[in-house]
Image 1 (tube, rainbow, N blue to C red):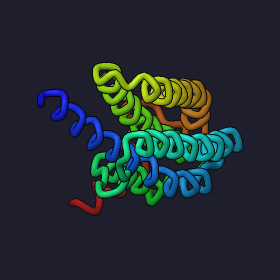
Image 2: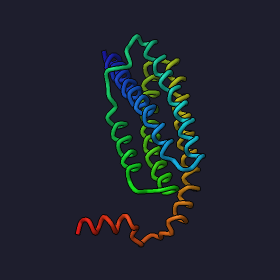
Image 3: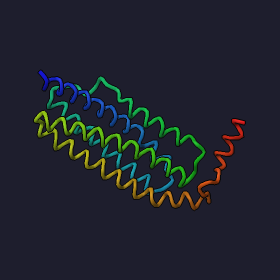
Image 4: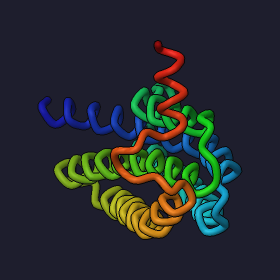
Length: 183
């Protein structure tokens, strides 16, 4: 009976990831379109293809379990995507917008890394060795994407600083506008 409880939780967590990945399939093209850096845009486009593969891996696991992947909405991913889309609605431009997109993308990657680490551990405990290898493959890809985003951030953040000419301690024009609206 205790193993059945863990198996139900495992299936629920997999459904959550399935929902998250499908939400990401819809969000990544918008992020790619908002990017000004060709390298960042290509990274989002490549991750879109990779994410479609993550969906397929999850579908294989559900098929092996005899379960449907549907029936759950990942509210965590929903919130992360909503925050990311707010960034694209700001008046950021060029490398500053790219820096905002990278921040949003890394939040998503860290969320996915946590989720895949959790289900991989559950799969190991449940003796689902075939699932472990599929989940491990996705987990490694998510970690690689996060590393690539970190490398891009180092370049893009420097460009954003140089293009804006802002130093810490100086209020940005956006902050000044906000303070005038509040006053």
